[in-house]
Amino acid sequence: MKFSTQVVRWQKAHGRNDLPWQNVRDPYRVWLSEIMLQQTQVATVLGYFPRFLERFPTLGSLAAATLDDVLSLWSGLGYYSRARNLHSCAVKVMGLHSGVFPHTAQQLQTLPGIGRSTAGAIAALCFSERVAILDGNVKRLLTRVLGFDADLAVAANERRLWDKAFELLPLHDLAQTMPRYTQGVMDLGAMVCTAKNPNCEACPVAQACAARYLDQPERYPVKNRKLKRSTQTIWLLWAQRADASVWLSQRPSPGVWAGLYCFPWFDSREALRAAVPVHYRPALHDSAPLTHILTHKDLYLHPVRLQVPTSAMARLPGQWVGADAWPRLGLPAPVRKLLAQRLSD
Image (cartoon, rainbow, N blue to C red; front, side):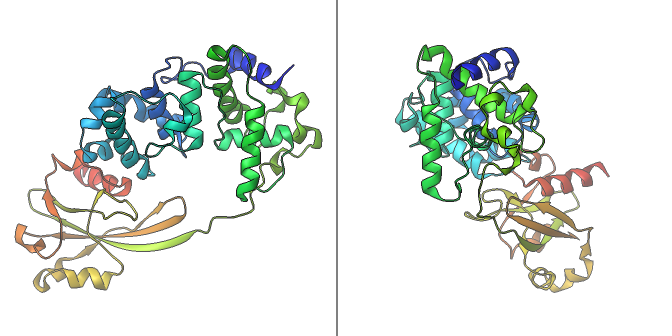
């Protein structure tokens, strides 16, 4: 039995069929879910997806929103460039395509934040285009089944895998099989062909799987270029007035937390102290430090609290934001957590 046929049958019987963005063929919902699911687990996205739809039920409502509104709802989901691209994409689809998503993967890739695999997912799930996807889970599944051991850190090898992924696609009844197949390879990668301890007994293509034959599933995929992690120590000036307003400034782009509102930050406590008027420096109070993990970097955050009047922050860029207003801003997760904890004290 063909690979695609086995995947389609398995997905119908055993795959995920009740997620809120499934079985609707609505490109807005599918696109939103695909962007949220990049580097983020389904369980986490399930908490954000309905809130986004409640606030932005249509593409037009998302395009008409401010970026601050979008970043506020995205806060805590991480990888904030996704939120900026999400908003930019909505604006472009409204302006360039009259509010209608393009129906082909090639056209979809011209939009902000939509790469080849995301474009393929939208085109296949919503419009039944015969086009492949290669997200992380699908790469793992296909390299294991095919015994594809070329180093995917080499662009030419990844292109070869794309070609092989295309060869495996269904050939008939594409209106039904392409959405089911595309969801199926995603489900198999996420649920069965997991990175560690794959459940080969439950896999419909196990008999044809090279990695299972070799008893080396964790050998695949091969990617030898390793990302280098770095660290950064940041001192945050947590200035607050008697009315609980806090001083926040918008982070520049590009950079960490670009476009989000944050406490003024400094590379050292000495630099932070120098930015505060002399007569307020004795009131600086160090709070407990915290660590925030990004994809390629560990941030060591040192909040330094300061109770000041309105005029004390005139030398620093930013603005006073009241306790009723900052929850609606796009804030980095650790800053939001610090402020929420302080409110509850």
